[in-house]
Length: 131
Image (cartoon, rainbow, N blue to C red; front, side, top):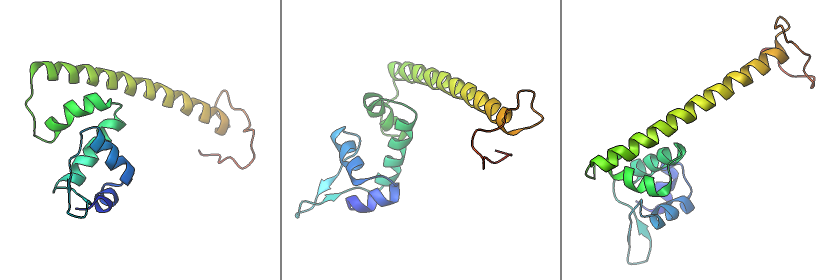
């Protein structure tokens, strides 16, 4: 596949694909005309890279985890320890985000539910009453 096809199917920019190559996360070959050619499975690999980055993993850790996610690398004790640590970090992040969401829900309820004990009229008219 050519770079534009992979980018379109994976939902990323061509620039992101070039960055993934620079980070040694994605491989391509070159045609005689110098165009990048990606192997089968490149779209799936890019989607996994995106997922790992979205989870907050660094490029270094993505480089370690990605081969195992794609069933390409050996799973060592050290590797398992590092991903257990990352999983704990993600759990803390989920907990923090859940608490922030709950607080935002409280604010929304106080601003939109006239039966809420802390109800206050929204500052902006036109705010939906059932937000």
